[in-house]
Image 1 (cartoon, rainbow, N blue to C red):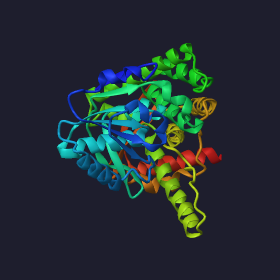
Image 2: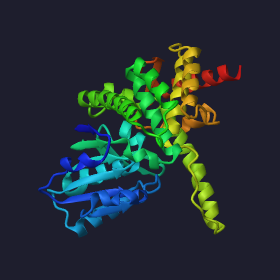
Image 3: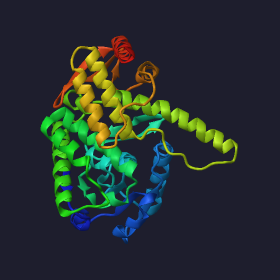
Length: 362
């Protein structure tokens, strides 16, 4: 997988194969960028967690068939992480697999979701429970899309950047915190774009390096799940609440789109803090480390608490993809740049969660 980082979108055409049919799977919200793909068939989707489903995959597959896409075609996924996950999954299974590339348009996708080859969809509110690992030919990254993003959508991607550096590079973690605490995507300069691309390139380097060594997540790659055990539980918990609110609104014929209680990156931010609390209860990290995380995350606009007791989230964790038997691969942070993959029993995790909450209440 090649990662191309550019200041603008103009160089994209150099990376699109010119000897096969090209099909673009693109988020409907990116209508202002449709013209970039003039002359190419656009398959537009509404990129929501609810639409990240097998039904959407079936609809896109049907559209590809009607457009005459053959086994030599090339699919480009353009959008955030939901879009690239769906596009990669469709490309991986369509006619037993065709070539594909990504143009991620959110920071979350550029820092994480579009890198590493994980493709898939949700099922019954469980995130990415159906999917595969298949690498795109390339990922084309540029900050040109960021000025048009809602601030909340941009900020959630910061969590994945900080997560990567908390795992691999303490110095770049501090550099990224300092940069994002003042960076305004709507007021970009050559200096800020260069600094941003430097941070993003370093982030991509660490992720692609670990993926190349452990593509199918049998060892080192598990560390990239840092913060995600509780993050996915938070998303599951709040997705259920959000769904009830939406159902009630529909019943009252008073429907209007609701904003999700927690976006993925926001849940990862909280999940990282929770993981640190578990680590402290296990005797691995200090309260100073937790305080630092909370202060740094808040300085870049990320949440550090979900207002839900740890134990209420634990019932969702038993369905986590990292669970093996009655044990789970839990990523324990020790300090910036140092985390460990520890296989612990779910019972021990529950005990540590109780101990962590006990310390909070004292």
